Image (cartoon, rainbow, N blue to C red; front, side, top):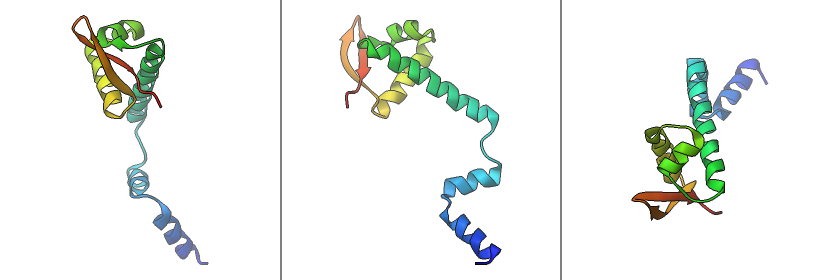
Length: 100
């Protein structure tokens, strides 16, 4: 197989997203750091919820993050099925890890 045909075959196997990243030079370090921080916070939230259901203020205190940021992460986790709203305590919804 010629080099050109091999290159075309390799290109066809890549996903459109992979090709776009390749053309743009990959992810910037700033964007990589942003995603790492997102994952770090969500890991802390999962760890805090392992001991039981908590409200956003309780989670914020447990992980040392401001309430608005904590709420943003909890809502993202809720949207993607990682947590579920299970009750209400002191006027705040209480969230727990989704089982399964």
